[in-house]
Amino acid sequence: MQTTAEEHLDPTSEITLEGVKARAVRGVAVLTGRTFILSVISLTATGFLTVFLEPAEFGVFFIISAIVNFLAYFSDVGLAAALIQKKESVSDEELRTTFTIQQVLVISLFFLLIVATPFLESYYSLSPEGKILLYALGLSLFLSSLKTIPSVLLERELDFPKLVLPQVLENVVYNIVAVYLAWRGFGIASFTYAVLARGFVGLTAIYILKPWLPGISFDKKSLKKLLSFGVPYQANTLLATIKDDGMTAFLGGILGATGIGLLGWSQKWAYMPLRLFMDHVLKVTFPAFSRMQDNREHLTRAINRSIFFVCFLVFPATAGLLVLAPLLIKIIPRYDKWELALLPLMLVSVNTFFAAATTQITNLFNAIGKIKTTFKLMIMWTVLTWGLVPFLGKMYGVNGAAVGYALVGLSSVIALYAGHKVVSYNFFESIIKPAIGTVVMLLVLLLIRSVLPAELSSVWIMIGIGSIFYFVTMYFLVGSSILVDAKKGVKSIFSRG
Image (cartoon, rainbow, N blue to C red; front, top):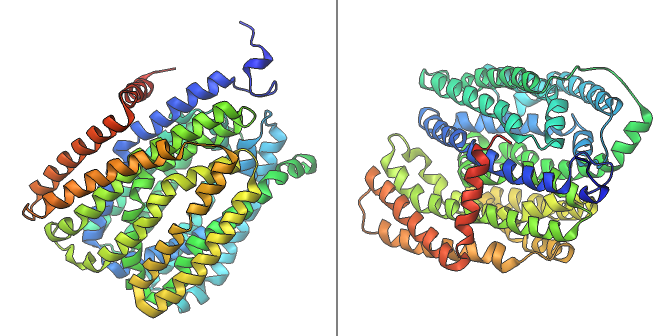
């Protein structure tokens, strides 16, 4: 059957509008449904690791990861994102040019890491095990760069069932290796072996699922075209990297390994709902929004639904975590060492609540080509982070740094306003209704926690009752459409098309 140009977002695009919508819905369902078990595995593994390892050991891992993640920014100049965002079909020259430039950058960065090792050893007082972990993470950066082009091709096709499988394998292997070795007393070396195992497994899997023959090429015309989007996009990534990983690396010299361990623990758990629910949606909506950028009606509906979907899941998960955390500290053996991180957990969670909506807004700006708007927001967040967090951290320690992060999170109201000016999303339907449902659930849980004993059975009772109150409240606020969407999601997960 012949397809008319009107059915496409653009006559040169590879997927029709209906195809984009169908694949986007299925992509969200697949990435949230099929990887939910994976996220539970990761959640469980983190719990075991925080039992087997000390805060200082976690602190070393967080610091070194931040250093390598900071270097990872320079391994790309936004070319991969430009390939995904590009309306027209991508050529072999563009793919191989991107691959060539990325490999040159990654190899150069690995040598830079080796040269900088003596300074890093001295500044962070790294042990020999920490030095080996540093090199292992550097090698994993190289392995990750080899996966870029197959991943880009799958994202352009919105073929997320295939894209998610390597991620599943990577996570399962990483968590099993890390937990087992930590249990056996390997300490920091547990992360070293886990990181290397994850890198090799993921690389093998992606090339089996999406075979692509790497090639060396350098086409100036293709490069110039891709850089017109890639450089502004990467500038935003640089600011995000400086704001997050750069700050973690800098705080390592202020708070020490133990302080970073406590702050990192609070951040890891506070951001867990985002990792569980939001990251999958972002993976789908960036290419989907890019294909819809010329159709504002469909784009508005898509942004409304995506923000609601993320808030609907992230808000109650975060609130539930905050209520249960003090109880779990008392119940889990050897977990009282993390009690000092409970207040930072609550403060950092402010960022999670705002990020549930604002990250989707910045994702929209990037997808429709408004990179400058995202850049301005990132400048604001970066300046606030570097102006508040180190100062408050030096004055009041871990709690002060957490207050700084909370204040930065509150500034996200500006992003919500900026997004509404571009696409008139329904603020009340998308954000306020999930917030109301979460407040009702939170009040019920606080009441129940005050009368239940500190036992594991109490945790399950609270999860069950809290879930019931939340879903009943949301049903009254949203109506039967919430059940219809749930049925569509389940159907999409198990469909083959």
